[in-house]
Length: 313
Image (cartoon, rainbow, N blue to C red; front, side, top):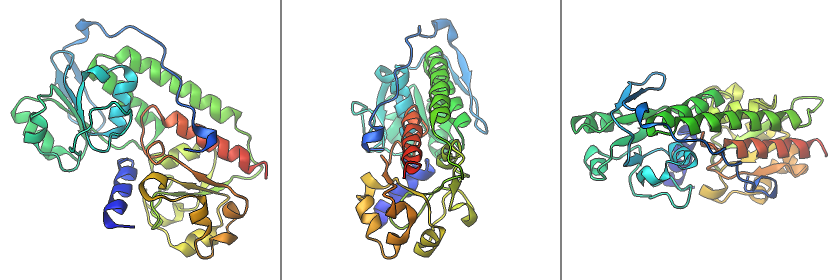
């Protein structure tokens, strides 16, 4: 795996890291119920996220730049797509998002200001960018990586409030909560908790229960074999995975790195792993499995399908 691909994969996981194409998970999330836009009187508005500086918006933004793939998905799902004039290179969903070569990690204030934005949404480590745009009076909403579903819901609400789609955000969050609760409730409960390994990159970087991804798996009472390694995104050894013998393996590096069930089964010693022997290697869509936008429902559904199949033998 090249250094660039490894870095990209880790960024997507930590972004989530930044940024289940199986037959069981091809369904898209249900549309949000149609609700009226926020009234013009909703502005000026002051919005903020935990740990971040409050952002004041004098009027509804009409030229939004999103440097976060999760935020981009949220904006379009909320109906704010027409307000988005540019997104970062990793924002590949939806397909009609106006992608550029900008990134939340390297974009400078001049390059972003050239898009003439009246709101920029960026990851919370883009503080230098935020300071630069402050000089030209461009508000910047810095969004931290979500650590839980509640964090994800809160970001959706704040993005909705900041863009004049607060009502839609409330409806979306309510539906996400309901859909996820329903999926989890209908998933058969195994007699013993299933163990799993979530692969972020072929060199065995992973996500523990301390990460957003891990918090989603936790909804099903599953045990993460990486948790003893500590931290949210450790790198495991081949021996660790083989000895832990997980019941399920989730490959979240299918798009970035071409990993699939056959490639995992061909690794030295992995043919003894329970998940490989029972054909319980799940090929996920990297993006769906690393972002905390509205498609997290599809991620939950993919996990549910895998848990159900694992109990069938």
